Amino acid sequence: MWPFRDGARPGNGRRRRPEGAPRPAPLTPEDLDAEWEQIGPDWRALRDRKARRAAEDRAPRPLFYACSFQRAATGELPALTATDGPVEALLWQRTQRRWGPTGRSSYELPSSGVILWFPRPLPLLGVYPRSPYWPATTSDFASTPKRLLHVWPVHVPGHTDTTVIVADGRVYRTVTTPEVLGGPQLANRHWHLEGRTAVAWSRGHAAPQLLHELAIDLHAAVAELAQHGLTE
Image (cartoon, rainbow, N blue to C red; front, side, top):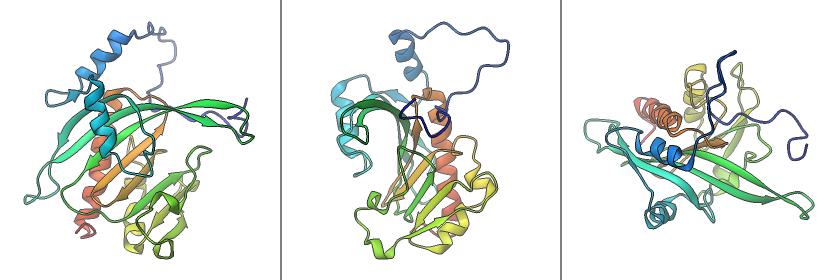
């Protein structure tokens, strides 16, 4: 059924229920609030609309144009090096309304992910698994001239439907490995690195604990780039 006529529906980042296990009771709004309050001792759910608005204002453009977070939480991850400060992190959920190709009908697109703010500049990078919702496009990097960008396929087994956008071939070689692309929560998600900001996301409203794991995997991928001297 449109807009999924071209294949199976993408996963939403939640773990599958073990075969034969009883279906859990639906979560109430209060249960969902509690999930976002229990991410960790140093994490804070943004339950106030004003606080979420401040987070939206910091989200990178054009990825988050006309952004509205339904749920969000903030925390910190370790510094990349002994001379850096901690990394700010935001976990988020949102639902966008998108128009179909004819412009006569629309559908809701739920998504969730993380934003990390680093104290040092990051190399430009876009990782795009094949998706009808977020195709690989150099327009996501509005601050970089398109002539400097390379759009390359990935030849790593299990990830050959993924496209990478980079400005530096060394970045491409560092991230296109089974270890980096196959991170438990990074696999089949989109990433975007530009300036001091790293973002990873996918379709569906993933549980905040899984988004916390995603933040850790994205932090580890940036740390791998730092080990190769690719962060300034």
